Length: 571
Image (cartoon, rainbow, N blue to C red; front, side, top):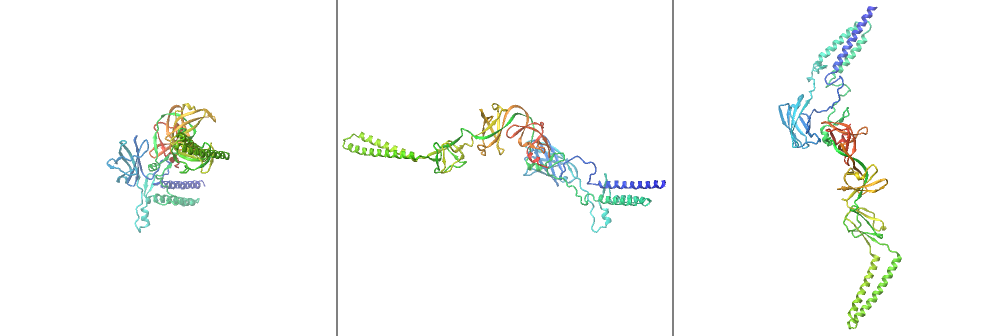
């Protein structure tokens, strides 16, 4: 019994050894060309087009191969701005010099039959441009040609098609398909022989091994260029912008041109501490005015009609007429007064007529005629004045040259003596009024700027501040230099006033700082020609359009100042 048991154990061990051999064989066959079953490599940018890149302190160049043409993207290293006025001579493989052809879109193209080869290809770019000449060197790694099966003649036998099948790679060695199949069959025969000699029913084990061998061999032959069943081969990532596993963002040069990405090389500068204030647009008191009625009354439109909002007027223009109110008692008094004056006029006319007759007969001196004429003329003038008092309208005239910014009347409306009928403002004379609280000394404000609601930057000039508090705040006024036409009186603005000691910092545009996924402020650093990395920063306000980076950046880094928000949205 002991002998039989020992023999059975040995047979089982032989079967297991055969199974191990089959497993190793299948594993080696599975790891054929086009597959990687080893340890995962570090994350790298995978593109569908071979690339070459080179850079210096002046230029940055990226070449993208498409077929037998190499598209060249030449940019300034510091700003990432395309260079469209350069001449590029390319030395290919050390012995072929080709002049790159410029295109209207700022891209240069180079064609060469060497671009259809395999392996690394050294390229030397001689750049000649008004911004400076430079020499750039890079290597273009051309892809290896795919191994394809020999064509099978029409009407060939299954044996010929089998012989023309592609080789099977085991490790670093390629084995012809017939030999690989023969080796598998030998292992299968050995396993079947062991199974037949078994007295302990090892045939099921052999059956399992046969199934494993057939499945392994079938999967092994479904290598590159053949069907793997329902599984689909992984497509190359291509040239689309995307976020990489390490958090960086890959943005190809064509996409950078579309997004208009611009960078700047950081350097520390003297930056004074600034504070943000809440303000609003007001009119310059010397270049604005209000139109009001002295006595009030009913609005009457002038011959040209009432002025409209936004209309430009000149000083002295009649804007409206006021029909003054008159009480009934006053009307009666005026009527009586007119009647008395008319009686006096009638007496004066009779007296003048009599004196003239006497003067003709030399009875009365001519001086009496003159006195009577003067008296009659005075009475007539008094009558006209009384009549005008009853019917004359008050004229509302423009006090300055400017634009109508407020018009609160229509024809027939009754206004009082305190009502503002029109407001006129010179659009070139606008101020900003801001509130300053206790932590800021308004006397130490050295400069300021503001940002309107639409993001329009405003340059301000300090005018003065009040000595009396209003709602626990000091009123500070600034004049707007060259105000844009979009500003309106009463519009809210954000004022950034410099008030404090000066210190060193890196000054960047506000658009360069964006919010990361966790809400912290970040900037995007241009690490490679087509790669960007997010860096957290700590900032302080500097003016309406710029910030001071106090921590997170060092000197000499390339930071994106235009297109940061678009890069931040790439996933």
